[in-house]
Amino acid sequence: MNKHERAIDQAFSELDEILEEHTNCLEEGENLLASGYLDSDRASKLLLKMRRTRGKLLSEIKRIIENLESTKNREMRDMALGVLNYLALVGLDDEINIITEISRRMHEESGNREFEEDISQIKAMKERLLQFSF
Image (cartoon, rainbow, N blue to C red; front, side, top):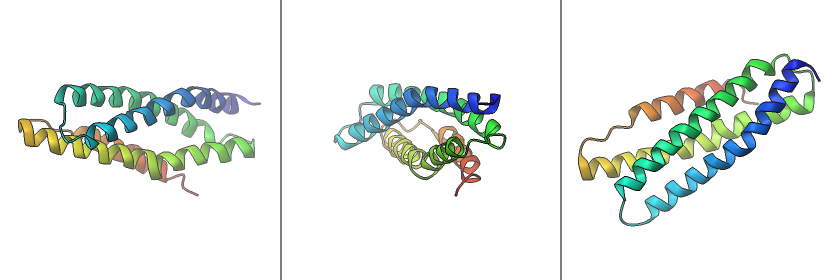
């Protein structure tokens, strides 16, 4: 295993926990939105948690992307591309939808909450990931 493959392997190890966190955040967001009432405090805490998780996710995505071209292990390369494509096609869209809906509802209640930066960051991540689509 060369140093690039080790870096991707380490990213996979980190991603196990991060993707679980990301999934939990998405589920929590869906549950929060499913209730008729939006608890602003809970929503704010969730958005902070989503930002922290997204930061960790971006760090590991960068590590994979930086080492992907130099990886000779075909199985590892395919697995990395699968993770990147999943995030680009499913996970990040779900996050955008949840943040957009929370933003809309919070804006209706308070009139002063803006989440464009979150959406822009996620879209930038998605654009970068779509470069690696099959």
